[in-house]
Image (spheres, rainbow, N blue to C red):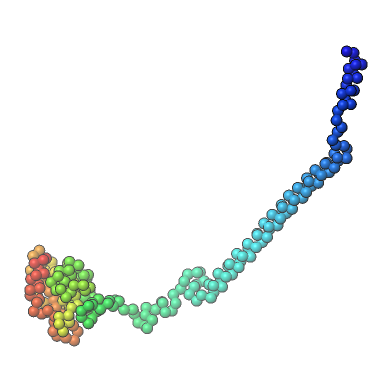
Length: 248
């Protein structure tokens, strides 16, 4: 096959090719649409950036105002409160700073509930005697209180108090405000160490003493109520002292 025949074959092949599906006008239109889309995207992105920037400026501008408003409210509250000092430290009101709203010093002790038996307060029984700087019996001895309640059933369920006496060092004691029929008074028990002096008490108080099984002396005291000369359980004191002494 020579070159002439080969050229004719190529020309015949070119004639059989299908026509193009686009022309110059179509290409230009597609290029214009692509350019418009890019411009729209750039414009949208720029608008979003501007909106975010403006939002940050607004927030930063509003924050100092809210902080100043909060500070102003706090200052107004502090100024309107009469019990807050300039430095924010609460001050006591005149009524709270005084020891007693009615004048004078506050009471030395708070009254307790009245006992089941007896007309006086168990917590205030003979506190004047006990409060005269005693060296012993300053607190209620639980062991002696339980033993006394065992021997005198009327004392069960009542609240014990310190012994109604002035005790030597190392002494222990407890007492109950009791009612013996129509007679009311305070019954105390005091256990003094060996070699110590007996407890001191009012002249109207009746006492019985017995030697404790573990050493020392056990004293049972019966003191009448104020304004009375009759002591409760007067006839039972000797046997009561012996019974308690055998337990200690």
